[in-house]
Image 1 (spheres, rainbow, N blue to C red):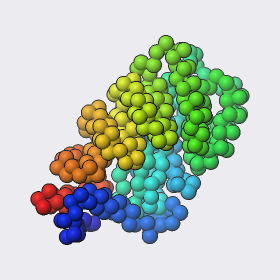
Image 2: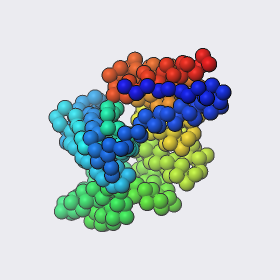
Image 3: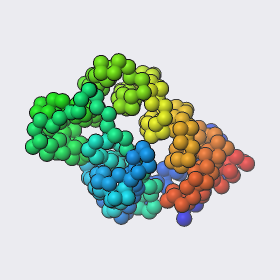
Image 4: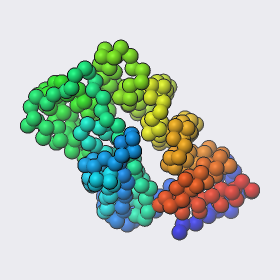
Length: 338
């Protein structure tokens, strides 16, 4: 068990306490890097996948990708459960995909000890245009799969070429245009990405006359916000995130992902507002409470951080991260007294 100790010097440096705690927390999650190299090690993650009605989804492909491109994969069983072993220490992008459902991901900080479960709720794809998209060239499905594999391996330019090849042969399958837009975003071709996402939004407007209530439109708006964050244009990003939430105010994962984007950018205030929104949508979901605690900790709002951490522990006392959080609380309480 890891015990967090605050140096005596911190007593006279109150302004630096928040940063100090953050560094110590980061140390806890990264100090195991000696156990693994290049994305491989003894780390293990698991989770389950359900649909919006709470039913398990079998046959979902789960791909965990390390920043250097190393990938691990698994497939959900009939109970929607999956597990991956052999991971190194660091942040992995965990992507869940299945034909007929919207792809979804989490960025998970993996350690060589216990890790948070990664659970997904997948939503069925709503066609962008009237009628059912038709695969004109069934043999080209292998091209689409190749593109998906290349994307998870972060070979975005190669994935883009595969997606464009597939779309040329199957022009009614509008879904692949989302993949193309995602490639532009990850390649850093932000203007192309923005144009592609906005074109998708225009298609929904043309088809339905409005974006109101359209879950896919909400996702596109969030993606546009993400692009503006990467461009450093946070005011514009906020506008698109807000539009996204207004269109789909009942999607807790959407709110959580927006919060995570702001948290990684160091904007604790906006991160807190979206973590709280995710909690408002689904009060029994433990994960946003934990992240909310860290966001409050970064701001030096220790009592609020403790409240959020305690709620996390109340909802998920057996979570692999629970011991770390439990050890952190007494140290924060000590800071408040001092």
